[in-house]
Amino acid sequence: MNDPELSASDIYDALARAGVPDDVADRAYKFTQIAWGRVFLGHLGLRFPPDYFCLNARGDIVESGQLDEEPYFVAATGLAAEHRRSRGFARFAAMSADVNAINDALHAGSKPENLSIAPPALFVEAPTPEGIAKARQEIGRRLRSR
Image (cartoon, rainbow, N blue to C red):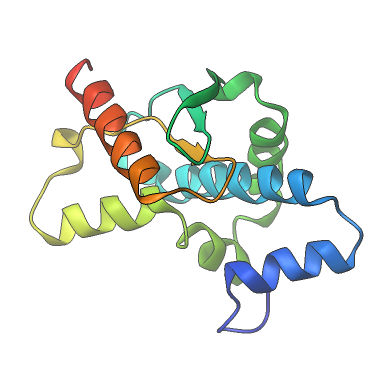
C-alpha cells in the first residue's frame, strides 16, 4: 500500500491477481476494514457494537453474528497490532465507513461519548437503490434500539 492513490478496486484487483477467490477477497477486505477502523479509533474510547449483519442486493439480511466469532474479523484484529504503526494501516483504516462517519461527527462538534454507533452492515452483492434504502431503515432501527 505504498501508492497514496490506492483504491478499493486496486486492492480487489491485487487479490484477484494473487488467486484469491472473489467471495474470500470481499469478506477479507470488508472485515479487515472494520477491524482496522476500530483499532484506529480505539484511543477515542468509543463503544462499538459487537454484532454485524450482511445483506443481499435487495437489503434482506442473509447473515448476522458476533464480530468476535467471525474468522476474517478475528484474523484482521490480530494483524492490526502487527501493522498498526505503518502508513498503510492508517490509510486502509481511514477508508472504513466507521472512521469516515465518526470523523464527520467529530468535525461537526460531536463528542465521542455522545456517539451512537450502528453495527456494521455489509452488502454481499451489489446493492439496488431499494436495497440501500432498506439497509438504512434497518440501521436506523438498530440505532434506536440501543
